[in-house]
Image 1 (cartoon, one colour):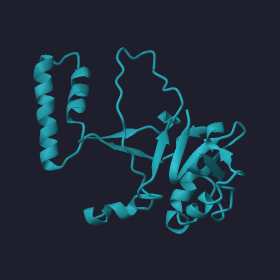
Image 2 (spheres, rainbow, N blue to C red; image 1 turned 180 degrees about the horizontal axis):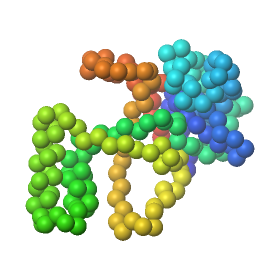
Image 3 (cartoon, rainbow, N blue to C red; image 1 turned 180 degrees about the vertical axis):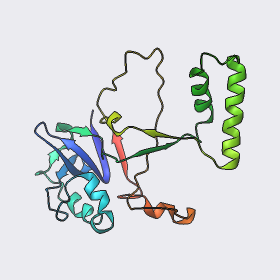
Length: 197
């Protein structure tokens, strides 16, 4: 599969010998050498931890994506960052959450599936009305790269799938006002886009 990134993006890659943080521009990746962005800054997590002082350097690195950089097609694309936490909100997935509640029905629950679905839907509607979203935690160890196989557990009798929208927080944040929320999101470029052909 051929990929091309317009403008530039930050990621984690493996060249068969080691994994490394890099900036991808066009179809090439510039390896971020240890110390290039400052002492102790080597991984994408390190870069995010120092985001306020280093993110402007990523554009300079992208300018180096010349013939000397590694073709993206020759690298394994790893998860872009190893998060400390994956905090997920299911409020936007009203129907999906309600269906999960039905499929996870306790053995001693005497309600029919239709009754349980109605109760779950009402619960999700109430959470949406009161602003009490449905939150759950994800496991960082469950992440895989863009082209990696998704390994399904053999004990599962039914597997579902869903697409995820991810926002990487690029600064320490606590009790942030809604109007200021986007200023804490790590972003390289507003119109960043990855194309697959």
